[in-house]
Image 1 (spheres, rainbow, N blue to C red):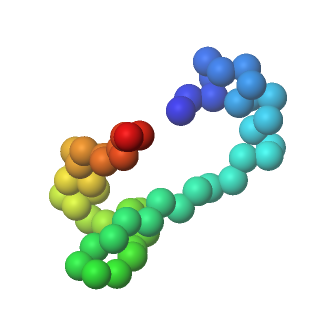
Image 2 (spheres, rainbow, N blue to C red):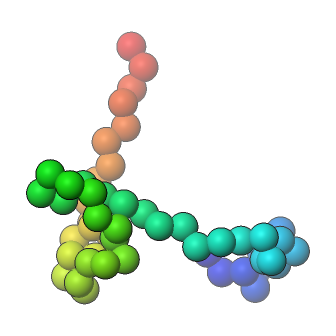
Length: 54
C-alpha cells in the first residue's frame, strides 16, 4: 500500500514494521519472501479458501 495517498499511514509511518508472510510448501512452512520469482508469481495467483457459516 502506498503511503503518499493515505494520510493515516503517513501519520503513523514511524510505527510500521515489516511483516513476514509464511505459507506451507511441501509439508513445512517457509516465508514467501525467500521464494524465487516464479514461485512468488504462483503464490499471488492462488485463490484463498474462505469458510462459510452454516
